Length: 473
Image 1: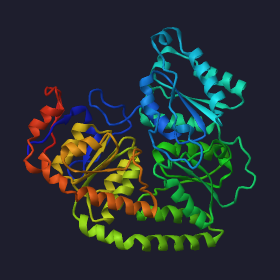
Image 2: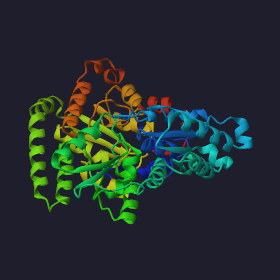
Image 3: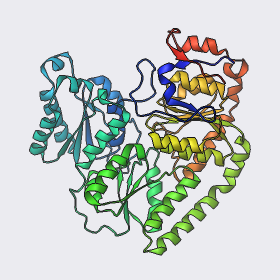
Image 4: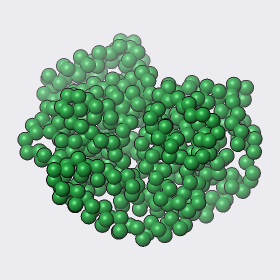
């Protein structure tokens, strides 16, 4: 097969293990014209803060940015659902010329009077940064008048990458930390950072810790509450699930309040168990916690083990491609897929750092392609060349998988099924089995015909003269 070319400027962000020295670059702005799968700064901030269910979330910008509001994470709440309402100041041409501060002030005042939120987050978009609205001044004025925290989120999209949006969200969230009373918090207590309760995972994880004898003070931000965030500085340990998004907050809390943190993952049997054991080990002065943890792990695994073995027999030897937001999730997915007997032929992320990609290099087999900030052409190229049977990603990767005629598993924030915890591992295994075993793929043209990659290049790249490098396979 003739290899599909890739853009020359992208070659430093792609690595195929065993074929070249490891010199991978990351953290760069997306290459213009490459149609990156990565989202903007505003989206990064929005997905972190959105699950705080009793807060008002107002987007200060044009109505198009409101696409990143309603149910962007589908985060479930056990109580209030104010976060599921979509609010925008809907800036028009006149506002761009004369400024949108008055519009923001009136929108904020009216929404607070109607909904009585515990706090309000105001997101600045690209146009706000360009016209120079003083969002912070408006927030201070409304906060004084209404008696609640009104927090600006400096998330103008042109500032950087999605990861910069995570930082903007953590900066805003940190302003709430330390405002509440810590009275009554257990000496064996934690905050869960970076669990967003997309399919109810936060409830599953919190129940494990409850059974261990560990109090969860705050979950940031899945099924989150403003008052819980305010007293989160009373916890003894921060447990960071989504390291790309929430390590910023963990570092700030460590510096100001002396709270240590650990990085964990709740996906897959191995990492889920380690997450529980690591927390139990932190509270070594109370050995009963470790004993209860061992019982929970033993009980939960024995419950799902027989069915996992049946699924493993059916999917063993299949090939999977992974492209997710944070690299830490990719680590867990590789382990989970290996447990099922599957091979990972492509692993990539939107926001991985140097250490993350070094870890991926060590975890992956020879021939596996590792990619940072990929685009549809590159993902399609390696799906074809590596003959993947399954693609694991988010909503933007789904069409790529289906066009290539392979199964797809949503492991991002549009799904409705919990994939974390032990029951989540079984759900994941079932979804993998159902999609890769579906008879529909035998009707896919990509499976019936020998794919002409030169034609694919023409289809995907309307400017064939763009400078590129060819990776031969």
